Image (cartoon, rainbow, N blue to C red; front, side, top):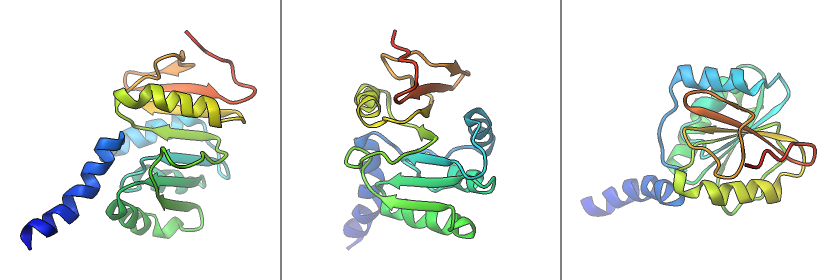
Length: 168
């Protein structure tokens, strides 16, 4: 019985790491930096791929930004919904694998994905993002695209019909 309970807890967290988006809580100072870097205004949309416990979405929604989160771990989806309850009119969280969804229209997409998946993710962005969209990647760079802005741990890219290709 104990093993069964442990598996129920371990599998959802391990699945995120295996599929590319491990659960690593974002620090408050980093979420504030990312939101400032994004330039999002109230009414614009942030998509968080691998939204974890909803911290970034809560901070964005507090500024009037609409948020859509995708998280494969059902426990973290539940926590996100609780954490963002106050902003439930602005925040939607889906239990989903980022590889199986069609990316919705967004002003900014935020990602924290393991480096080994960045090439695949870049291909997904190139294929699916048809409207101008800013992509902010935390820690890891996209392999073929030059960032339009970077800090010590964050890379910003433009995708979509009017975006510069930014290819290396």
